[in-house]
Every structure is written in C-alpha cells, then in structure tokens.
Length: 144
Figure (cartoon, rainbow, N blue to C red):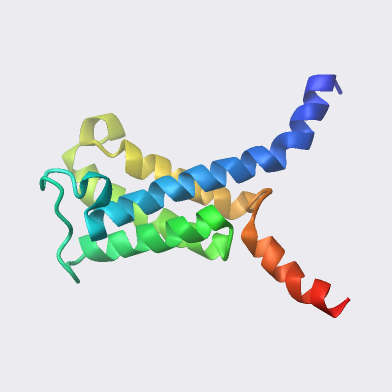
C-alpha cells in the first residue's frame, strides 16, 4: 500500500463526515428557503414561501429542513438519510420524470443527486465529526 493510499484511508472518515455535513446543510437550506423565504425563497416566486400544509411542497420542505439538519449534525442520520433519499426519489419520479427521461432533460439533477447522496450516507454511516456518536458516549462517560 502506497503512502498516499494509507493517508487516504486514514482521512476517509473525515472526508465522509465533511460530505455528510455539506449535503445535509445544502438540503436543509432548500427547506429553509421554502418554509421561511430565506436564501431567496422559493424559485419563481420572487422570494416567497410555500403555503402552510400544501401537499406535497410544504411537507417536502419540512423533510428537507429536518432531515438536512439531522444528517448535517450526524444525529439519527440513517433514518433521516433514508427519508430524505425517498423524498428526493419521489420528487424525481413524480415531479421531474414526466418532463423527460433523463435528468438533463427534466431539470431533475438536484433531486437525483440528493437521492443518491442520501442513499449512500444511509449505508456508509456518518463518518467522523458526528454529534450522534458523541451523544451516545456521553452517558458512558458520566458513569465512569
């Protein structure tokens, strides 16, 4: 094994943790934009928000915000990642796919990338820097 391979293996949990944080934060920002009008709000509305309770837009925004934050912080990340992946698969097949077969034809690139990214995070685990791991250790440390 080369020196570069050893270094990459050593740093892999940190790269995975950084990936988890970035993907979760980006996903949460979509939810925050839709729910609260921050970051420019909902595209095409001039900074507006999704009306409360509207199916499926408002519920998708809640999933984006909640699951994005849980994944970013690494708390209950597997369940949140599965839910986020499923919601993006739904968005791709129900919203985008009828407009064309491929993501480049139907503007579904973000939905497809988020769906596959969260599916990957479901199976890889949170990597380094996960708050959930620290919270699980806290009772053990207090008992010691």
